[in-house]
Image (spheres, rainbow, N blue to C red):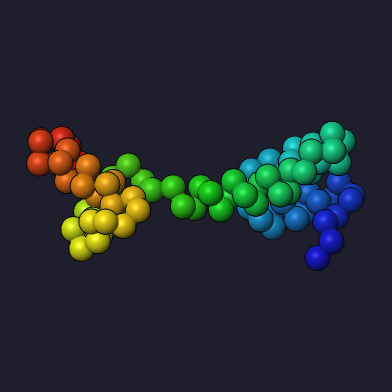
Length: 91
């Protein structure tokens, strides 16, 4: 699908993608030449992968993996988390 080059069409695309203030995104891309559609899509995907503050399941996964594969790259993350928790740190 080609990227719309018209502000109205691009605004409608941002609207379909649930962007806040779709007109500003579209106007910036058209008027300033900034690839805002690409930027918005990247940021939207990135925000979907941000772990919420109250979700600590990822810690358990890292600690389990470190115990079963202590020599693999990044296993130190799980070992460090375990040491912090054993030392009394809050999750």
